[in-house]
Length: 258
Image 1: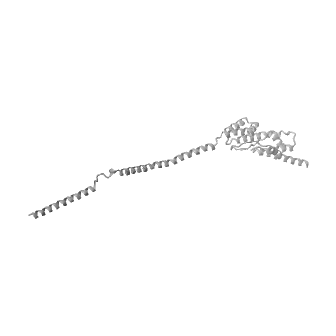
Image 2 (image 1 turned 180 degrees about the vertical axis):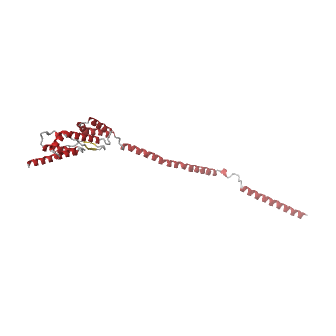
């Protein structure tokens, strides 16, 4: 009865122990893929969990406790392989679990770390790509952990700092676009002002005509055209009437003398 109770307590502690450091430790902040400040995703060194016991002499309960701690950390870090494999070993015998922790744990974990490094290359900048390539070329657990916990965020900060800012460049372009429009809008008013010139010149010509009419020399000009013909006709008729009267009077005088 005491053995079952102790095993249950150890299994519960397996889930509580990985969570305790996360509560006590404040994770450092860094930049995410969108260059926004966010908490870093910390990848734990799972080797320290296994090395705290001697796998050859540890009890089955102690081995299962370490296995549950490793699986909890692998799930928190979203590792693709280790959580499934670890669950399969926990469902098997104690000897299979012990053998896996001795020999196969590192290879499965190394694969997960490599995949985690490759995930960071999505939409990555030049500095992140260079740092990830360096870690992949080295290919060790220590290089992968150093990149995922520190190198990634240092390289991403350089890439974000090199990105051009869009807000300062937008302001000059807006002001430049407003200036030509304002200048063009003043053009028609200037042309309309210029169009008033002819009216001024016509007024000036009218003024010149008025000043000519005020001179005394305007009345002494000869009258020509239709008025001249009328006067000539009246004068001719008067001459004819005068000649006829002269002839009639002379004829009467001659008769009176005879």
